[in-house]
Amino acid sequence: MAVTKPPGNVTVTLDAVNRKLRLNWSGDQSTEFHYIWLRHHARCPDGLPNDTSIKIDLVPDDPASLVIDDCKIIDEHLEITWGDRDLKTTHPLTALISFRYDSIGRKRRKPAPVLWSSDTAVPIPCYPYSDLQNQASLLQISLAIRDFGIVRIKKVPVIPGTVAKVAEHFGVVHRNNYGDVFDVKSDAHMALGHEYRDASMANAAIASYRKALAIKPDYADAYNNMGSALKDKGDLEEAIDSYKQALRIKPDYAEGHSNLGAALQLLNQTEPALASYEKAISLKKDLNTAISGLGMALLKKGEHSEGLDKLRQGDGSILFNIKSGLSIK
Image: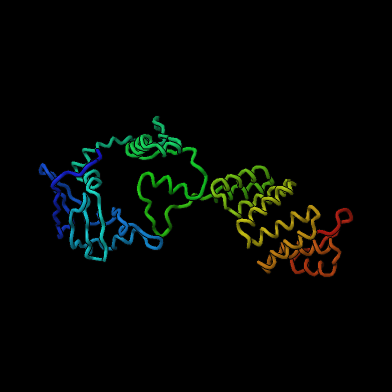
């Protein structure tokens, strides 16, 4: 049960030997908090990380080094001055008493965990994302997490940063060496898309790349690979749009410029194709696909000497077929 107003006559005592702080209040009630718990659960500006610090830095490698120089009650808050570093933290008394973790506090909260396994008949609780905006619904979600251990949130917007926003409804997101949250990876869909392309299953590959983009909308590689799958199908205009989207996200993407040049060349847009190949080579001088593509574009333009030279530089074998003409292998 949450405490909405702190009790009167709250006093504080320290046990420096065992590194514990005891709160005492009316009715001979009391509870203890370990120094390390208080340090980790600081909620004041001094205790929270800034853009360059790391939350775990507030807790030293050796908890035995934690020292409290002074503590006092000010305006319904516990203020602690730490002696092991220049730091003050404040803790609302209502929060401390509500979240006391001694046996009395745990019994009072009466958690009723639901045990479950893969074959349980009890479904995992599921709530729409919109419920997070309603306090009554948010309370029900929090209780479900307490009792069941896990919930599902559906219809969450696929927008970077949303995972952190969801987590913030339930507590402070602690920044660490890896950032605020671990990104949901789309590599599995990318790998599956590659397998479909290798199996000449262009539609399935495109679907996989779209799933990767649903998770990570700014995934330049996914747009590039989807463009190649669209080109495999012969959807050249859509392929060009996909390549251009990859380049909007990542302008220095040499492979993207080269692939765009290839698609443009198939549409007989020789000049734009030449520009794309040249841009690719300027970014990656040893990109053979771009060098060979540039050679073919130059041949088509009528610049045979330079075109053949580029084809040789690109390690391409020059083939001639009486029906299809020059090609690269």
